[in-house]
Image (cartoon, rainbow, N blue to C red; front, side):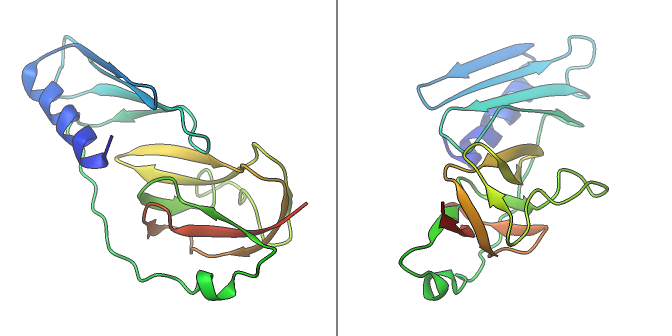
Length: 164
């Protein structure tokens, strides 16, 4: 399901006055709940994605209508820097890339860190939902290709990893 389709679903639920909508496919599960006493002021949106690299996310929204702006970013020189033996970890979605869980916390990973499968590498915010991106490989972080708080596109290279 594309981001625009999710946005439209949230807008539809907000306008319809429905208290709960569930949508489930093989790839993902979305539940949108609005409180009966204030349907347009407060809602809870939960997205659970099945593809590896995206974990369950729950985020309180100030309004059930959320928007996301995407900016087209120039392709990084990652393809030039990638040696045959390095693996590239790519973004599974569009959104804003964050290297920390919150501004006052430590970075998830730095260059030179040894990672294993399942380690959280970063967070990508999409539509006010913060998605933890987990490593699908074990190895050592060689290069971080995206600056903190930068917009990222689907399938954009984020990290270069030397496999273990």
